[in-house]
Length: 398
Ligand SMILES: *Cc1c(COP(=O)(O)O)cnc(C)c1O
Image 1 (cartoon, rainbow, N blue to C red):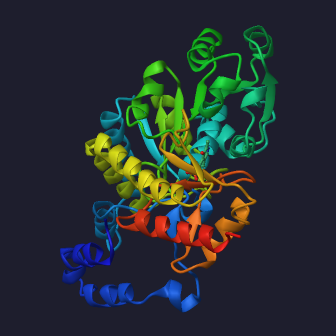
Image 2: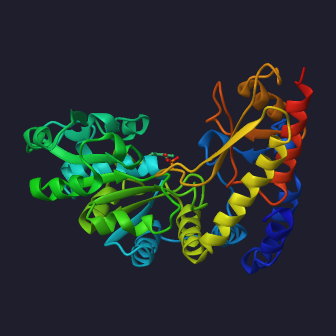
């Protein structure tokens, strides 16, 4: 969809670069293949939006917009304000900011809930003496990313029922965190979480990092009344990989901003520069205009191309799964009779990785199923994955 040609074209047509005489060296730099020089293999992404696999690539209009930022200076706080206002308008919420990923949004948002705009409190973090120091979560919602919340120094107070939540709430409670993907596992649902937050006067925060598509989720959770919402910028939205969105209440976004770059304090290290701010905005604009039904049809087609080819191999069975909340896109799963195809799914995954071209299957692959995520593939990739998968399976037949 966006190979090297559109990128170069975007680059060449960037007037600011040519006017500064930077176009030639920049274009020359693009011609270098630094991955190759370093011996780092690129691959077909048949996995999905996994950070360790660099998750997503940016569409050409996002790259082009970032490209216009590089050689120019702006006031970073002014840019964050303007980008935030535009994002808030587009996403129908009170306020917004660009963060360093969804994890960064969790940290800066929590810091904001603790300190408000109190400068002394901001300077004091992570020393929470005299400050709010607890975050309430449902026990079944605990997850790896709550470390981004705990990074501020707060302690997580686990509860299971509404009554337990009401009993746990106290003047030291900074915030109530909800992990959206875990909603079916908890006794309190999202609407209940928001209602209880309002009743108790505690900000409710939802981590919805991987929950686009559907696009409507970008305004659904603030619309429900969550005080803060975190999204990843570099997953389904395909903005800069190191960017994210924090959406919500104006006072809390202002407080979050005071806790992070360029304003100092604890989360100063979660820096976001002009390119990510502009890239994020343009990625959101693009995402809003996208024909999501057509995207979905294309993902279904890719899954089908691989499925149909693999099903022709003896004993292969398939399943197409669409996770209900996070990564709500088609994933293809294949299994086979190990007596016929003498290969475990993990071994097949390794063979695909080590083959040419290298293919990364989905880390959801387990002992029983070989899994593929098709949404981050480029045109033609599905056909290659289909062919290579058939080859790998057939080569292991008795
Ligand atoms: C991916 C993810 C994150 C982290 O997102 P980044 O944008 O990489 O910081 C946080 N929470 C959940 C639920 C995620 O899926």
